[in-house]
Image 1: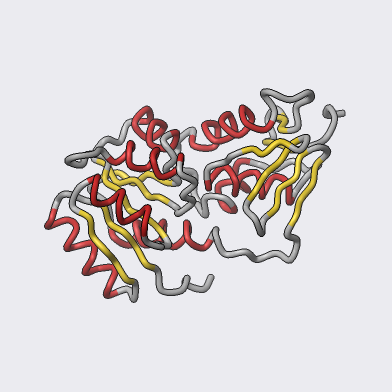
Image 2 (image 1 turned 90 degrees about the vertical axis):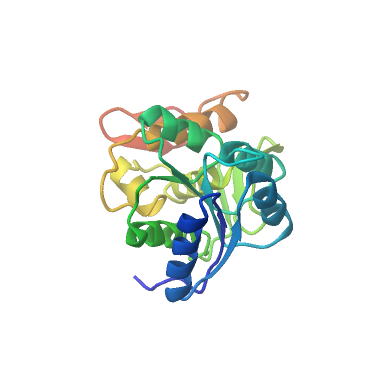
Length: 233
């Protein structure tokens, strides 16, 4: 697979040595990093400048990383976010994803893995199909305007939720396995042994089905998931 174009990366990290190391490694890889040393500065830069991806430490002075991400998502910022943290328990990762992170990497990390992950996040934003609008029953996803509606009502999705729904709707009426989701939505070619898919499926289901008549996002027991208008046969 081809490498992505030069990325503009915002690193929000209070550890100067760690930030300098990451900035240097990104530059050597052909990318353009900026650095914010606290949460307030990071929030200001992320909300006022255009970046391809954000790399955000959880524990930051002035404003913690998760509150920065939550504020950006509330304002409609769709820039992919990779969370860095020394907190690596499942509950910690779930909390980070629920706050609006698209991926989560535990410290210490290998730069090669971080680079692969941020490139994967950026790659998922590059449209590859000609279809701009997907429809399943009363649900419509417009890839051009990055909008989702059901019964004419706007549904606000976070970037990872949008890509998950996009892939499911692209494969509407077909079973989509967990492996397919890991490879095509997260760009993982291995099982990270987390419940990241379950978290996002649950969150997505709560937004597109909970307050409407009829469930579109259905679990196919022992196989995967399917988005379909009407009940499974």
